[in-house]
Every structure is written in C-alpha cells, then in structure tokens.
Image 1: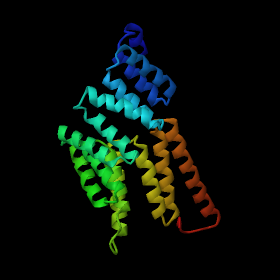
Image 2: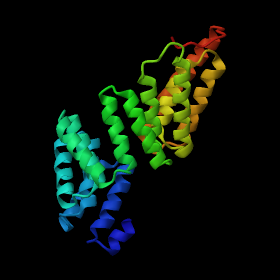
Image 3: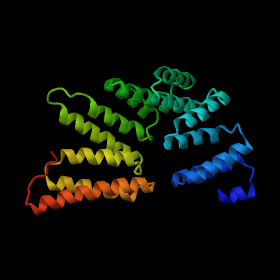
Image 4: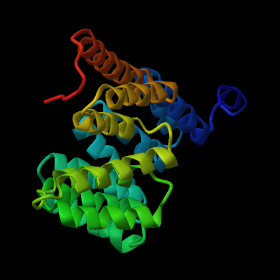
Length: 258
C-alpha cells in the first residue's frame, strides 16, 4: 500500500487500507495520521470514518467513536456494520434504547446478517438471557459458518447457563466442541485458544490432560496475529507448564486446579 500511496497520494481509499495495516501492526499513532489524511482528502469517506471509529473503540475513546459512527450512518443510512458498532457504543454508555434502535435498523436492512444475529445474542447475553443468546449465536453460525466469533460466544453462553442436575459435564463438553470448531474455521482466533485452554485446564484431572493444554497454547503461539495475543498466550502457557512441573516435583498423580 505504501507504493500505491506514492503513486496515488490523493487516494483516500488506499490511505484507509494502509491505516488498516498499521492497526493490525498495533501502530495506532500511524493509523490515526493516515485516517486523518484520508479524511482531509475526502471528509465523507465512510470507510475511513468506520475504521477510525473501530480504532477509537480500541483506544476506549468512545465519545469520538460515537461521533464517527453517527457521521457514518448519516452518510450511509443503509450501513449495517456502522449501525451495529454505534449500537455497541451506545450500549456501553447504558443507552439501551439507543442501542436497540440501531440494532433494529441494522436488522431491517439485512435480517440475514450474521453480524446482526451475533449482536442480538450479545445483547441478550448481557441481560443474562443465555438461552436466547445461544439461539441467535446459532443463527449467526448458520449464516456465516466460517466466522469463529459466534462459536466462541455460544460456548460462553453455554458455560454461563445454570446447569440442570447431572448436565454440567455435558454442557462443558458442548462448549469445548464449539471452541474447537472456532479454531477449525480460524486457527488464528486467539479468543478461542484462551477460552478453550482455561476450560480444559479446569477440567484436567491428570497431568497428561494438563500437558495437552500446554500444547494447545503452543499451537496458539504459532498462530498469533499480534504481540498482545502472543504475550497473553505466552503467560498462560508459562503458568500452566509451571503447575505441571510443580505437580511432577511433588509426585502428584492427578492434576486438579481446584
């Protein structure tokens, strides 16, 4: 993209793509400058506003993110993702009425959007309606089978559902299956490694099972997208390996995190 910028220095679209690369590299300062340059060329560049809003959300600058997203939906009232992002920002401000309004607008535009179903599920999850949340996550999976996020969200909803007598292990296994499916569709999805590792470690009763978790984290480390993801998994792997080593040193035959 840098070569494209040299050839087309006034191309806002190319600048936005270059900013996206900077975001992926966690170079937020460079990304901000590129978004500002793109918007100085085209103040109505919806992609620049949307992606800058995503960056501002990552930086926890929600008021500025809200400004960008409101401008997005003003320019493109049919932009499903902008409505959903704005709903998320409003929800974080406890403006549930505003969040639901934009969610309904997004759903009216595209009722078969996986993103819409996922967000509906997330909203129900925050209201502790885990069964309702699972229903929407399952719809999202069917609409977009290669998107790992609904699988992880469905697993979390499964784990948070109060179990019936004798069903706890079955529910835990269902969550494991969903997390493994998330990694099948996207081997680089860090959240799935984190949740799957914690769940399997909590269920480990012997050292071999705990060592499998160490192996899982090592696989995750080979597939990290960012330094932050690598730090998180490295810390979890180191801690798990230390627990296994300590158990071996104490001649323990079982491994129980509790």
